[in-house]
Length: 271
Ligand code: C2E
Ligand code: CA
Ligand code: CA
Ligand code: CA
Image (cartoon, rainbow, N blue to C red):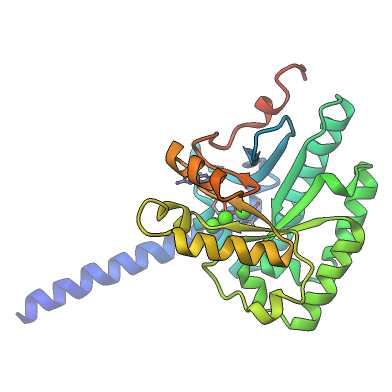
């Protein structure tokens, strides 16, 4: 028994050591990812209900390391722990603004929603950086939106109210991402300027399995708060039919499209 236990511990230790080694390797490589051009953006359509011809996409970051994709759910937390998220987040915003600029120049304006980490959001430079980017790229604020998760509700309430007001004044719309899964405090969110809530896939998945009461509750709350609703992770025709029936404003998910490469955004132009 003693021997078996020892072996058990050894395997366990090795697993932990392996995970630790991967983390520190990724952290080191992530520092060089921008300059080595290993990062790129992909774009997933956010579809208006009923469908119109607007061009509205969420920007999603991709990292390919030695030819192998590293999932955002693995490297974003690492970037947050090491503080790298600020420079990566700025890079993403800068790239997104360039894409918007290009879309305006070729007469097919795109509206892009960019994910912003709570850490980046609470920086003093965040709103001034956005102003600088809009100015430098000469794009209308209405074409850039940001998505923040409920983790921002850990930020001081007065700072939150202040930032969201500054964004409203700048004309940049805000969506609350993964709505319903985090620590949204209704008393705080009620005082913030929020344009949209994105209902997390977990709720959409439960549509066929007794999930309707929660969806109805979110829908009626959103209506009284004046928020538009985006349903995330929509995968089936049944979900589309039910979400349409309860007057959701936008849908996003593999049913419509997986995230696409930059080149697919401008099929009629050459670069
Ligand atoms: P998120 O913001 O909730 O993004 C939605 C995720 O769900 C994306 O995963 C998307 O590819 C995936 N998805 C969309 N539709 C479907 C569907 O129908 N079925 C399924 N199974 N999945 C779907 P992705 O690209 O792996 O991103 C994961 C998370 O990483 C994002 O979740 C976001 O929190 C974070 N992330 C991605 N890009 C950025 C970024 O530029 N900055 C920051 N701070 N976070 C980012
Ligand atoms: Ca998002
Ligand atoms: Ca989400
Ligand atoms: Ca998510």
